[in-house]
Image (cartoon, rainbow, N blue to C red; front, side, top):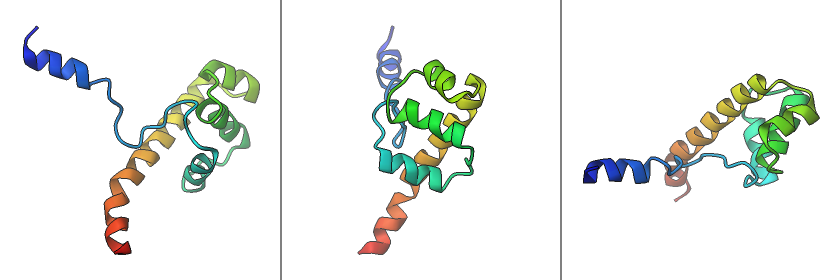
Length: 98
């Protein structure tokens, strides 16, 4: 392994800014993201909250909420994309505050 390979290997595990980590998302932050998403199903929102806010595993959140794991994966990916987009937009909002 050369230095380049070690560098890529070491830094590939760092999540992108705005990535939502299961069990580490504040409830208010979660609901703000839901508000700007196109996710309206109470079952899906509940499953996402169980996973992202409460830290349940995906399969547990799906069993409790009554949705499929594939549905949760799709909506989780959608919410992750929104969260990362918000972080990318942040500098423009900060610039307008000053």
